[in-house]
Image 1 (cartoon, rainbow, N blue to C red):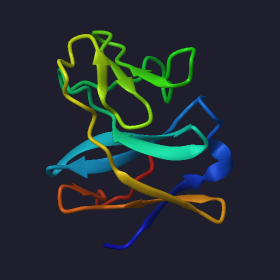
Image 2: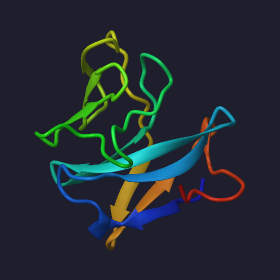
Image 3: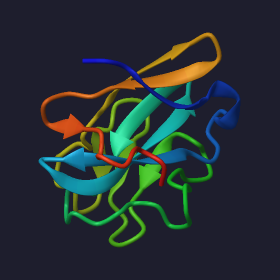
Image 4: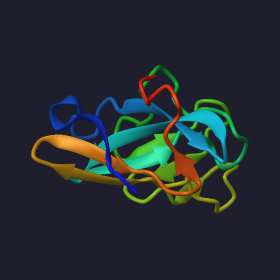
Length: 125
């Protein structure tokens, strides 16, 4: 599938505010987010594995003070921001859904899959 431009690399600070964008997951509209951790971009569906609610506690804010852990604002499930694995709380070992992203020439690109696709009206959130 064709890569989709998500954001400029400069919009992501190490362990800082994330970039949200819209996706279709199983044909249902939801959002995803990109974070920079360990100087690499990571991308996950904005959906807790415990209950399908958005994770951010303020718009685009997913990480704890360490900048390495994604924390669900609703029930406090915690996930490793490098791979989405469940670290504790009600996620009960279930990870976040990862999206394929790549950083090239100062731009972050996402590659859609059969399961996670581009909404008809674009990815802008």
